[in-house]
Amino acid sequence: MGLIVGGFGTAHLVMKRGTAGEAGERVFAGMKEIGRRIRALAPDRVIIVSSDHFYNFRIGDDSAFSIAAEDVHIPFGDMHLPKDPFVGDAKFAGDFAAYCSDRAVPVCAMRDYLPDHGVVIPALLISGGSPIPIIPLITNTALEPAPSLQQGWELGGLIRSFVAEERPQDERVVVVGTGGLSHWLAVADMGKVNSDFDYRIMDELTGAHPENLLSMSPAEILAEGGNGGLEVVNWLIMAGALPGSPGERVYYEAIPEWVTGMGGIELFNKEINAL
Amino acid sequence: MEDRKHIHDFVHRLWQSPELRARFEADAGAVLAEQGFAEAECALLLDGEFPALGELGMHPLAQMVYSLARNPQIADQISFGDYLEDLE
Image (cartoon, rainbow over all chains, first blue to last red; front, top):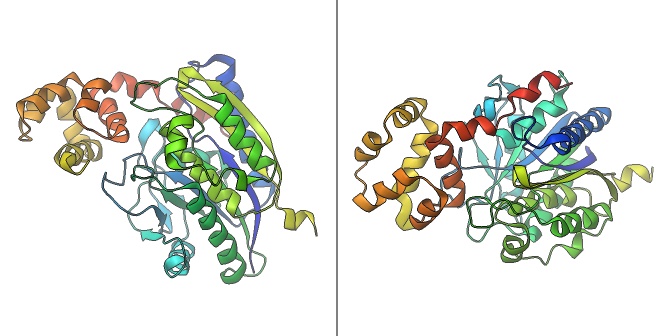
């Protein structure tokens, strides 16, 4: 059986350097620290959970969750990111989609997915120059209603059981939930950041009480965290893969200049710590 | 959003095709005229600001993408390029 050896939540975007002063630099330093911590766990596979930003999906696509079944990923190239290919694992992704097919949360295996910044920036921060296979798991937050935190949590549980039941002995897997925290995109409140919402999400997850978040509906998240805050579901997928595991906040800055509450956390797998 | 499908399909093609995006950057009016949009739709798309795109019924994620295509100088502000040299 394989094992989820770590879970992380992190922002997946920074804007032009210098546009948020020292706070922006602290965010980038925090993101690099998360990359270091992931490499220290020596993962064999990293699942990066992100949203698609209308770069691959179309409005009206009705799959809530998709996984990129490719051995090589070719980035979309947005945000002046390099289009250098990076390693995936088509079998892992395809097997996981099949595993989920007759369970509570279906996952679509997709081909020809072009990772955007939501996957590529975390992948660059994680790799450290070594090719750790990356498996992008993509949520469709453009759905109406958007995927719920409860669905995300349940999907995280499927990641955990899939790795335990279907993956090779001693395989080490890290799950990274990306995006958020509060931000409002292309709506009247754009530029607003709700630190209370952001701290609530981080504190409940690092306090090993994700169940306190599961009753939040997409409508509540839209009100408190904005339409960009719907990406918190990505963090719940991560947390669902490490149930009951406490953690710590790695970084947080409310950055109105970047129209986002930028946060990062690590969860420590309680099963490993109990060994 | 279903009745806005033609708008969303255009934005998707615009973002996917560097060639179309370059032509759009050079002459947005000409590219929009090729799409068969209603006059009022063209006016809102040429305006390009979020309130106009919202009035058009465009999804916020599509608005973000369209805004980047309409205003390349904004795209330059949402850049990871300066951080690449500091990766470990």
